[in-house]
Image (cartoon, rainbow, N blue to C red; front, side, top):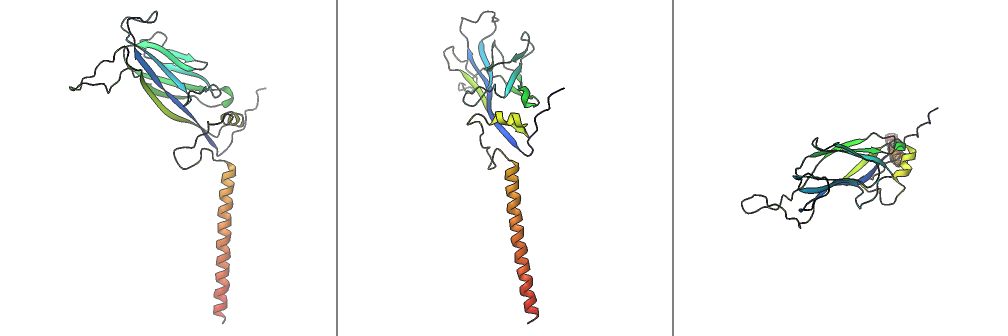
Length: 214
């Protein structure tokens, strides 16, 4: 008999912050073994926490789908760090698919990242891009995002809030978590307000009745 899935928590959403992107650096004459002659850069694409945190408590694997010219272009990384290092000469779109741990019972999410190898701001007066030197700093293309889990199950909710600092307030004024308790508090405030309005109406009716009979 299959285990009964954990109950989902209605009206509640939790977000977890991540950063994803790539770093890249031009290689010199010494290249990694098996790197094609035409490859000029070494790059790393990754998914991690904003401060480099290990996300394996919620992520089971990350699948990176590279350009079809790479051997076995679909690469699955099933243990942290969730990153992939390769060499290349051109920029292209990489499909990133995040699979969550089994207990989460959540569907994978998928997005694209444009692999960046060159520093576009490095231009001469004619507007032509200048090639970065071997000793130039790494090129970085990094983005911040938040994965929102709507109505997570009870077991996964405990995982999501287990580590301090992971529950961040959103950019809006609302709180990250909206629960039944907050909903009930709002209902109670509305009920109290409606009660006061009813009392005022009854008081005005009595005053009006007295005025009519005097």
